Image 1 (cartoon, rainbow, N blue to C red):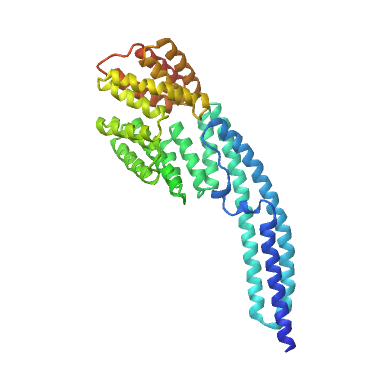
Image 2: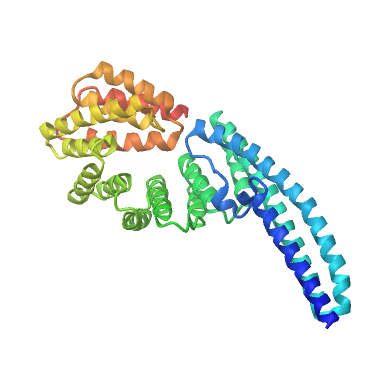
Amino acid sequence: MKRNVLRKLCLGSIALLLIIAACLLFVLPGTHVLASSSRTVNIPTPDATSILNDANNAVSRAQDTINIVNSFATILGIVLTLFSLVAVVLTILGIRSYREVLSLAQNLRASMADIRTEAHQTREALVYLGLGDRLLSQKNTTEALENYKKAGSLLPNDAQLNFVLGRIYSGVGDYEAAIAALEASHSEEPENQGKVQKELGLAYRRRGKAFNQEADYDMAIQCLKKSIVLNPNDSDALAILGGLYRRKKEYVQAFDFYERSWSINPGSSYALGNLASLSWYLGKPGEARMYFGYAEVAATTRIKKGQSEIFWDYYDLALAQLAQGKVTEATQTYALAIKETPGEVQFEAVLDNLHLLQKAPQPMPGLDSIVKMIEDAKDRA
């Protein structure tokens, strides 16, 4: 009888210690951020300034996380010591309970080691990400990519980091790395996976343009259609798909996707600019000028709001000004756009549209000099 009571008391003590340990996991401030780096690390956005600021902040948070982990490790060590004392008592009551306690202690120690390793890797990855941003802002693309790839190797299964890195690689023209990173980004949320598919489509489209590979355009279309299924209200994905059909010279489908994009987002200067450009190319200058007028208002509004990647809005505004005969204003706006353009890939996208307009039945005054201006800027990039 006494033996059973003692056994119950000892088992009750173990239960109490487990409750204390569990409480410590939740009570310690910020401990929950260790659960999964893919959900909790605020990976910065691809805009150069915000990436740099967010990366620096994230490094500080990662260091705070490691401090919390170290504090918890000390407390856990005390708890495990108590477990060991109780385990000695349990040897009197039964070898099976003793083994269970030892197994529990070993599992807790192993879990703690894994958490500490992940925290250190997260901090190190964020440091490399921040270094990459600084180097990229200094136009040192080669060393920037080396640092980005080190960050990716430390957290190879982090969906959000792979998404950000995929966008960066695609933006600087490393399409193989971009596609690999984006395909490794397996987000649990359908909306986020839709964004991944959109970026994959964009990477395939850019690679197809760079290497004249028709198969890449087909892959891009597949990815973008998946993106639209997951995010049916993503106007950018619809407009990018319109651009792909335009490259395939399937102009009816291209116009349809541009119109769908505009109907979802009436303030999209991107969709309006493409509707206008395609109308001009197809010999409908009156209709084109109407769309260019809308695009000018939309782009100006976005610029005033200070949207990210503002160079695209400057390009939309400049083309609208040029099409309406405001050559001097357009030249000034193109100069602003060129100043903000991050690299060769973006210049290629702009030139692709302008080269199409050069083939239109009605010449656009000032277009040839603008093309020369951007080609020179691309050569300097």
